[in-house]
Length: 191
Image (cartoon, rainbow, N blue to C red; front, top):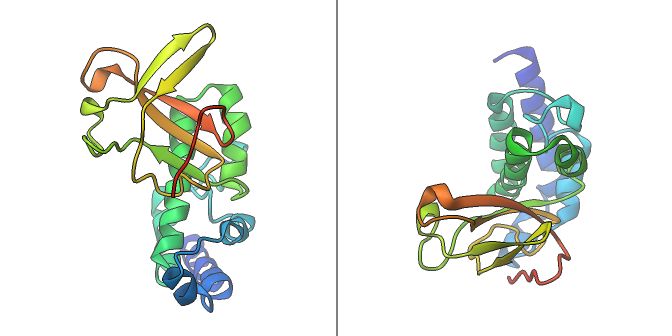
Protein backbone atom coordinates (compact mmCIF):
# COMPACT_ATOMS: atom_id res chain seq x y z
CA UNK A 1 0.00 0.00 0.00
CA UNK A 2 1.40 3.41 -0.95
CA UNK A 3 1.69 6.29 1.52
CA UNK A 4 -1.23 8.03 -0.19
CA UNK A 5 -3.39 4.92 0.07
CA UNK A 6 -2.44 4.48 3.73
CA UNK A 7 -3.40 8.14 4.36
CA UNK A 8 -6.81 7.61 2.70
CA UNK A 9 -7.34 4.43 4.73
CA UNK A 10 -6.52 6.23 7.97
CA UNK A 11 -8.64 9.27 7.09
CA UNK A 12 -11.66 7.12 6.20
CA UNK A 13 -11.31 5.01 9.36
CA UNK A 14 -11.09 8.09 11.61
CA UNK A 15 -13.98 9.81 9.83
CA UNK A 16 -16.18 6.72 10.09
CA UNK A 17 -15.46 6.34 13.78
CA UNK A 18 -16.09 10.05 14.42
CA UNK A 19 -19.26 10.47 12.34
CA UNK A 20 -21.00 7.11 12.54
CA UNK A 21 -19.31 5.11 15.26
CA UNK A 22 -21.73 5.98 18.06
CA UNK A 23 -24.97 6.23 16.09
CA UNK A 24 -24.82 3.45 13.54
CA UNK A 25 -26.58 0.73 15.55
CA UNK A 26 -29.52 2.95 16.48
CA UNK A 27 -29.80 4.44 12.97
CA UNK A 28 -29.77 1.02 11.33
CA UNK A 29 -32.34 -0.32 13.81
CA UNK A 30 -34.56 2.72 13.09
CA UNK A 31 -33.86 2.60 9.30
CA UNK A 32 -32.65 6.19 9.58
CA UNK A 33 -30.42 7.81 6.98
CA UNK A 34 -28.56 11.04 7.74
CA UNK A 35 -27.50 12.99 4.62
CA UNK A 36 -25.38 15.22 6.84
CA UNK A 37 -23.03 12.29 7.42
CA UNK A 38 -22.40 12.05 3.68
CA UNK A 39 -21.71 15.80 3.72
CA UNK A 40 -19.10 15.28 6.44
CA UNK A 41 -17.37 12.59 4.38
CA UNK A 42 -17.55 14.95 1.41
CA UNK A 43 -15.79 17.74 3.32
CA UNK A 44 -12.91 15.31 3.79
CA UNK A 45 -12.80 14.46 0.07
CA UNK A 46 -14.05 10.90 0.54
CA UNK A 47 -17.15 11.13 -1.70
CA UNK A 48 -15.34 12.03 -4.92
CA UNK A 49 -12.11 10.07 -4.74
CA UNK A 50 -12.14 8.81 -8.39
CA UNK A 51 -13.72 12.00 -9.74
CA UNK A 52 -11.38 14.34 -11.66
CA UNK A 53 -10.01 17.30 -9.69
CA UNK A 54 -11.53 19.73 -12.21
CA UNK A 55 -14.95 18.66 -10.85
CA UNK A 56 -13.89 18.90 -7.19
CA UNK A 57 -12.90 15.28 -6.85
CA UNK A 58 -9.56 13.88 -5.73
CA UNK A 59 -8.63 12.57 -9.18
CA UNK A 60 -7.42 9.27 -7.75
CA UNK A 61 -8.25 5.71 -8.76
CA UNK A 62 -10.84 3.13 -7.88
CA UNK A 63 -8.40 1.27 -5.66
CA UNK A 64 -8.16 4.33 -3.39
CA UNK A 65 -11.95 4.63 -3.50
CA UNK A 66 -12.34 0.96 -2.53
CA UNK A 67 -9.87 1.39 0.34
CA UNK A 68 -11.91 4.30 1.73
CA UNK A 69 -15.23 2.51 1.27
CA UNK A 70 -13.90 -0.60 2.98
CA UNK A 71 -12.91 1.43 6.04
CA UNK A 72 -16.29 3.16 6.15
CA UNK A 73 -18.06 -0.18 5.69
CA UNK A 74 -16.24 -1.54 8.73
CA UNK A 75 -18.43 0.87 10.72
CA UNK A 76 -21.52 1.00 8.48
CA UNK A 77 -22.13 -0.85 5.25
CA UNK A 78 -25.16 1.40 4.71
CA UNK A 79 -23.11 4.60 4.59
CA UNK A 80 -20.38 2.99 2.47
CA UNK A 81 -23.04 1.84 -0.02
CA UNK A 82 -24.60 5.30 0.04
CA UNK A 83 -21.30 6.91 -0.92
CA UNK A 84 -20.72 4.30 -3.65
CA UNK A 85 -24.24 4.73 -5.08
CA UNK A 86 -23.85 8.50 -5.02
CA UNK A 87 -20.66 7.96 -7.01
CA UNK A 88 -22.48 6.23 -9.88
CA UNK A 89 -23.94 9.46 -11.34
CA UNK A 90 -20.48 11.02 -11.07
CA UNK A 91 -18.97 8.24 -13.18
CA UNK A 92 -21.77 8.23 -15.75
CA UNK A 93 -21.72 12.02 -16.12
CA UNK A 94 -17.93 12.14 -16.30
CA UNK A 95 -17.92 9.62 -19.16
CA UNK A 96 -21.06 10.60 -21.08
CA UNK A 97 -22.13 14.05 -19.89
CA UNK A 98 -21.69 17.28 -21.77
CA UNK A 99 -19.26 19.86 -20.37
CA UNK A 100 -22.24 21.84 -19.08
CA UNK A 101 -23.72 18.79 -17.32
CA UNK A 102 -20.37 17.86 -15.79
CA UNK A 103 -19.86 21.36 -14.39
CA UNK A 104 -23.38 21.56 -12.99
CA UNK A 105 -23.91 18.11 -11.49
CA UNK A 106 -20.59 16.49 -10.64
CA UNK A 107 -19.05 18.99 -8.17
CA UNK A 108 -21.89 18.95 -5.59
CA UNK A 109 -21.93 15.14 -5.77
CA UNK A 110 -18.14 14.91 -5.43
CA UNK A 111 -18.19 17.28 -2.45
CA UNK A 112 -20.96 15.27 -0.75
CA UNK A 113 -23.32 18.25 -0.85
CA UNK A 114 -25.78 16.32 -3.02
CA UNK A 115 -26.83 12.70 -2.83
CA UNK A 116 -26.96 10.79 -6.09
CA UNK A 117 -28.95 7.76 -7.22
CA UNK A 118 -29.18 5.41 -10.17
CA UNK A 119 -32.63 4.39 -11.49
CA UNK A 120 -32.52 1.20 -13.53
CA UNK A 121 -34.48 -1.58 -11.78
CA UNK A 122 -38.14 -2.30 -12.48
CA UNK A 123 -40.55 -4.75 -10.86
CA UNK A 124 -40.89 -7.14 -13.80
CA UNK A 125 -37.31 -7.05 -15.09
CA UNK A 126 -35.03 -6.26 -12.15
CA UNK A 127 -31.86 -4.71 -13.54
CA UNK A 128 -32.19 -6.23 -17.02
CA UNK A 129 -31.98 -3.08 -19.15
CA UNK A 130 -33.06 -5.02 -22.22
CA UNK A 131 -36.44 -5.82 -20.63
CA UNK A 132 -37.08 -2.30 -19.34
CA UNK A 133 -40.59 -0.87 -19.81
CA UNK A 134 -40.05 2.77 -18.74
CA UNK A 135 -40.30 4.95 -21.85
CA UNK A 136 -38.98 8.37 -22.75
CA UNK A 137 -40.72 10.30 -25.51
CA UNK A 138 -39.31 13.46 -27.04
CA UNK A 139 -41.54 16.48 -26.49
CA UNK A 140 -39.98 19.55 -28.09
CA UNK A 141 -36.56 20.10 -26.50
CA UNK A 142 -37.35 17.79 -23.57
CA UNK A 143 -38.23 14.19 -22.90
CA UNK A 144 -41.21 12.91 -20.95
CA UNK A 145 -40.38 9.80 -18.95
CA UNK A 146 -43.21 7.43 -18.13
CA UNK A 147 -42.70 4.42 -15.91
CA UNK A 148 -41.88 3.16 -12.46
CA UNK A 149 -38.52 2.23 -10.98
CA UNK A 150 -38.10 0.10 -7.86
CA UNK A 151 -35.36 -0.72 -5.39
CA UNK A 152 -33.52 2.55 -6.05
CA UNK A 153 -31.05 3.04 -3.23
CA UNK A 154 -31.52 6.56 -1.78
CA UNK A 155 -33.97 7.50 -4.52
CA UNK A 156 -36.10 9.22 -1.89
CA UNK A 157 -33.28 11.54 -0.76
CA UNK A 158 -31.25 12.03 -3.94
CA UNK A 159 -30.90 15.47 -5.48
CA UNK A 160 -29.46 14.07 -8.72
CA UNK A 161 -30.56 10.81 -10.32
CA UNK A 162 -29.57 9.06 -13.49
CA UNK A 163 -32.75 7.34 -14.72
CA UNK A 164 -32.75 4.87 -17.57
CA UNK A 165 -35.63 4.72 -20.04
CA UNK A 166 -36.37 3.21 -23.41
CA UNK A 167 -36.05 5.68 -26.31
CA UNK A 168 -35.77 3.19 -29.13
CA UNK A 169 -36.47 -0.38 -30.07
CA UNK A 170 -36.82 -3.18 -27.54
CA UNK A 171 -33.60 -4.62 -26.21
CA UNK A 172 -30.53 -3.04 -24.61
CA UNK A 173 -29.64 -0.76 -27.55
CA UNK A 174 -32.83 1.26 -27.21
CA UNK A 175 -32.07 2.54 -23.68
CA UNK A 176 -30.93 6.07 -22.78
CA UNK A 177 -29.88 7.71 -19.53
CA UNK A 178 -31.53 10.90 -18.24
CA UNK A 179 -30.58 13.31 -15.49
CA UNK A 180 -33.55 13.83 -13.18
CA UNK A 181 -33.31 16.42 -10.44
CA UNK A 182 -35.19 16.24 -7.18
CA UNK A 183 -38.34 18.32 -7.54
CA UNK A 184 -38.75 17.69 -11.27
CA UNK A 185 -42.42 18.03 -12.17
CA UNK A 186 -44.08 14.61 -12.29
CA UNK A 187 -41.27 12.84 -10.44
CA UNK A 188 -42.21 11.07 -7.21
CA UNK A 189 -39.98 9.06 -4.94
CA UNK A 190 -41.33 6.52 -2.49
CA UNK A 191 -39.70 4.89 0.48
